[in-house]
Image 1 (spheres, rainbow, N blue to C red):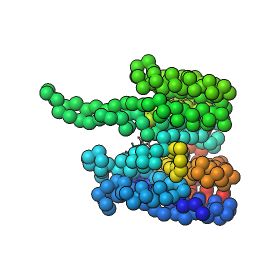
Image 2: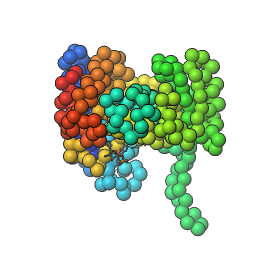
Image 3: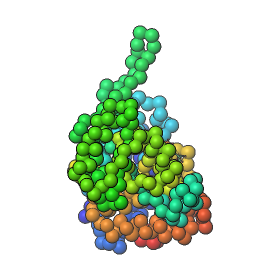
Image 4: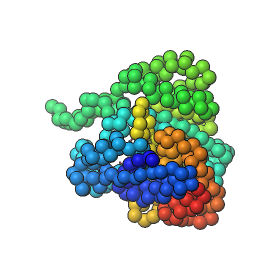
Amino acid sequence: MYKVALLPGDGIGPEIIAEAVKILKAVGEKYNIDFQFEEGIVGGAAVDAYGTPLPDKVIELCKSSDGILFGAVGGPKWDALPKEKRPEQAILGLRKSLDLYANLRSVILFKALADASPIKREIIGDELDIMIVRELTGGLYFGKPRGIEKTADGVRGFDTMEYTDKEIKRVARIAFEAAQRRKKHLTSVDKANVLETSRLWRSIVTEMAKDYPDVTLSHMYVDNCSMQLILNPRQFDVILTENTFGDILSDEASVLTGSIGMLPSASLGDSKPYLYEPIHGSAPDIAGFGKANPVACILSAAMMLEYSFDKKEAAASVQNAVEKTLNEGYRTFDIQAGAKKVVSTSEMGDIIKGYI
Ligand SMILES: NC(=O)c1ccc[n+]([C@@H]2O[C@H](COP(=O)([O-])OP(=O)(O)OC[C@H]3O[C@@H](n4cnc5c(N)ncnc54)[C@H](O)[C@@H]3O)[C@@H](O)[C@H]2O)c1
Ligand SMILES: CC(C)[C@H](C(=O)O)[C@@H](O)C(=O)O
Ligand SMILES: [Mg+2]
């Protein structure tokens, strides 16, 4: 029996979580896996209900679970709140309090979606499989001091970008090991021509490469990487980068696959529970219309089957069901190119479920 904490959040969060649960239940029946689901209120919904985006009882629920499936948080309703009350604190707080320092963002182009990508076919090819390993609990997101303060002649806003050797080593180890299981090529992305944290990052990653002689390591500046992802995406296997760069590069990389609604992620640490979430946000512009693509959330659930429960066959069945659905021409509105039929969020979930 696996206890799964469901944290739907705001906007399209509840819509996509409902589809992922549908798929997990179907997988459970087929592969004889028992799930016990328990829901927690986070983000703007929790601000409205409890006055805080991440209630203590949700952290307790997560700590007592075997896996956490997170939807998305945020929206215009809560944008003017002070930082501690913003819905985004829910996901930032969970990552930090569970020490989930490595975020694996899987960038896979399904063959059927090659025409949904705005990148020319000859550049993107038929298949694309990049793994972005994003550091998740350090850098600008959590560095101190930070703030906004009055000065003699105006106002000053400041953030701190910081990394320790230990923080760099632990996430780099995960990236080297991921490369070992894949095509054995690691690109470490930094801004070592300007930033001190990047210079430390580069020297540590270079030193560590000696322990992974089967992995080819290269370094790339982040500005060049943002260009190379569009110019020649097939050069990449595993990309390792710090928190802010990884946030930006992964949204960019998602476009290669046709839509940000296709990209799942797994947030891992030294101990379980791990957390799984699509890389996209709460998409307030389409929330409530049944237009959200549930695939990123469904594939996040598949990552949970693999990384938290070691159910590789069940995880592969979800991946295959998504592939069959796309091959049959079913599409949500964000990936319409080549569609035989454009379907709603819940119809997409039903069709995928049918192929489990
Ligand atoms: N992990 C999270 O909870 C998370 C991640 C990113 C942004 N956010 C928050 O979400 C809110 C909206 O942010 P944003 O608009 O910058 O980013 P977003 O990812 O929510 O949306 C960007 C664009 O992508 C589209 N999109 C996103 N997911 C989609 C899906 N599954 N199917 C189809 N289209 C999809 C949206 O409609 C929108 O046009 C903000 O409050 C932001 O802070 C939360
Ligand atoms: C909502 C926000 C805090 C979050 C981040 O910046 O990490 C999101 O953009 C993401 O990519 O998961
Ligand atoms: Mg982001």
